[in-house]
Length: 130
Image (cartoon, rainbow, N blue to C red; front, side, top):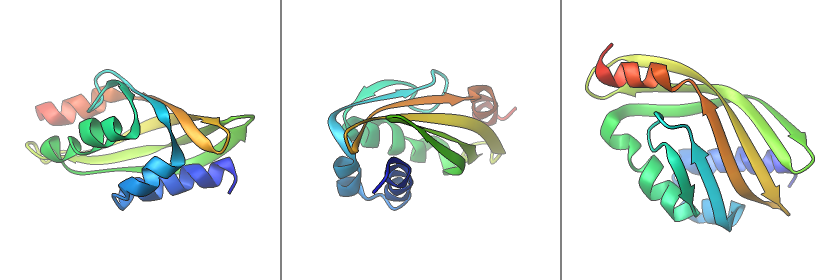
């Protein structure tokens, strides 16, 4: 499986809540960086922390939340993904589309680092009902 395929499989595992597969695709010392202002924003270490603090936490604020990749490009040990988040805030009912870039760094065949770049303002506005 090439690195782009690994990232595609990671997105599938997130959508299907396949935690065992997430652990298999990432290193034990995974570093996961999300923008401040994004749900679960900050630096998280390990797949368990990502699942527990970020993805499980979305259910409280959002009635739906997904990421749709639009392009994936591999350069050396990094895969760059552009796409959009689509979300609906639970309290306001407001739907938003948020452009984003994900950067995955690999160590061997597994993901060891994630860095997110996203427009968090539109997400915060939806949560506030603006």
